[in-house]
Image 1 (cartoon, rainbow, N blue to C red):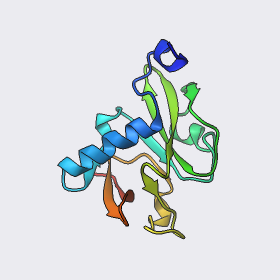
Image 2: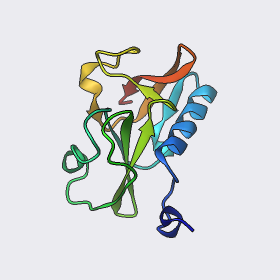
Image 3: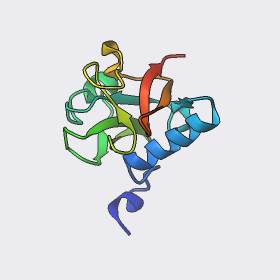
Length: 135
């Protein structure tokens, strides 16, 4: 039994969450609801590391687990679960989320936020986030 199972986390990895979002988007015209992942979900862009926005997103809620502390090649998804926060890393190779300088571009103001849903499109044969939606 690995430590994630022992702690009874809702997901094994960020890449598992990405696959759930990709499949949800395929069923729903390119839009995946983040409420199916957790009541509150926040994201942070590749290149900043997992700890940068924790106080901004979840003030006074303890971090229970951080899947990776890599700052390149992954973006981060933060979920609140049982009065704690779990931070997962999502590989750019599984679900790409580019910055304003990359393709597909994501609007600058969408680098750190807590959206309701996500738009996922096929970008050169790879699933890619093209927009986060608040409604």
